[in-house]
Image (cartoon, one colour):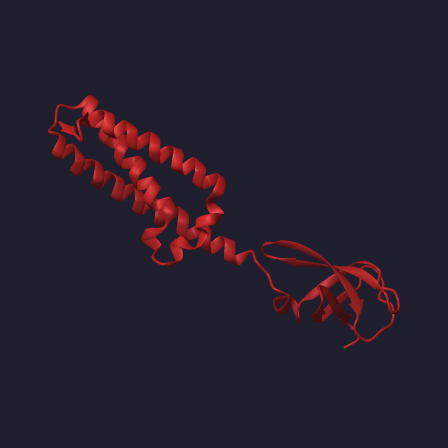
Length: 174
């Protein structure tokens, strides 16, 4: 079968090379198109490029290895690409997007948490507090909320966060 004066195998190979090259460029410069997937999850560029790559690879391989009709091969290749694209979306992209959101913390989310002083906080000075969480440890600069020194190893309660500095009080002194 010929399309646009090219054998179908050559067309599959051109599409495969083009979509593979676009995927490499997307990996390198993907931040430019980052919001494109927010319109619709199925318009995510990585899904479109993956569909093109899988479709052309399956079509190319089936054209060379089977004696089936080209129209039938196009239908089978599209079905294979759709199924694998759905698997990619459901089992890779969705979990990755949820994992990224769960690792982020804000200053407001630190209020009310308990930490441990790892660098002593002097009177009217700065020290450092270590906060443990499910996703890891966070070490932040800290200052005494009431004034007065806080020794190393002391557990503290985070009252507020001002300009990325924790305002803390001794946990036992509440």
